[in-house]
Length: 155
Image (cartoon, rainbow, N blue to C red; front, side):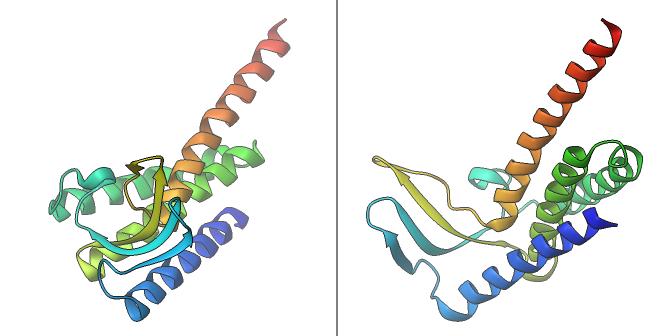
């Protein structure tokens, strides 16, 4: 149950931040947080990361629905044995649902974190995107730790 609460907190923060951007900023408006590095920029994306598959909402509905079902299954099956696995899956679930809500109701995803690394303008992203990436990284770490434990038990 705690993993679903974590996902719900992520969804709430994600949706509140997106609501704030939509309510308070014009599209493409940018607020400098750290000059030449970090901005809050009102942006919309009809695709996935880097705008790939733009406008393919039907595809995203199907894939995200499958991902949500699979993540819930994995939480039920594996989260009892590993806190880190449960948290990582909760992050992925929260992020997937956060962007799914945008696609369902707005037909686009609201993005706003705008980062420049030198002259490179990294694609604009949001809370849901961030938690998806963090969740995937944590899954890799949890898998590595689990495999190491299995190796130590066999030795």
